[in-house]
Image (cartoon, rainbow, N blue to C red):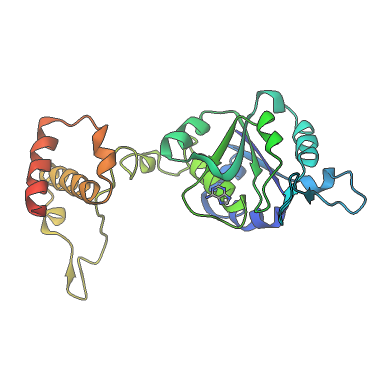
Length: 241
Ligand code: ADE
């Protein structure tokens, strides 16, 4: 996969892209990531990229020309999936991450607190928000998107098993524990030490359903529940009463 990022703050990406899973995925040639400073495409002699807002108002607006010229300089841009990060975008989720992970080439234009000239929407496929809060710019949103996509590329996580059975695939994840089994009198649930795989499976399914019921009941609405799930949910509803 190829990822291009357009930003005014290239330095914000170095630490994240040079660490952990993303670094490994780059080294293993599973992904190549290029950062573009679109200020370089400004035609202004001082490399200014913003200007006054038509219609008036205090804020400035990022001009569309430097971004579009930067986009046009990217090889294969025509067929790339192009997104812009903005709080007014469609809300990002795991389903969207999976769909982006199937792309060969993603281009992310980082939004900016001043706002970008609306005509940018003619040059991108989608506007994406990572949640209902306002960041100072789209860079952190772009990083969140890239991180969630790269880890889904087959081979990027050491153990292929690791991105199964996890929160948001369907329901929230069950609690996990590791050694020691007693930490300051906080004990690991007995069932996990029992070695009984069927009991452990049931315990984990029950705990997943329970935390989902309490925190994210919306996720249960579209879930295909089997008979065992339904019985567990009945029990969970009774605990709550
Ligand atoms: N830029 C500022 N806030 C944002 C958000 N929540 N999602 C995406 N881009 C943003």
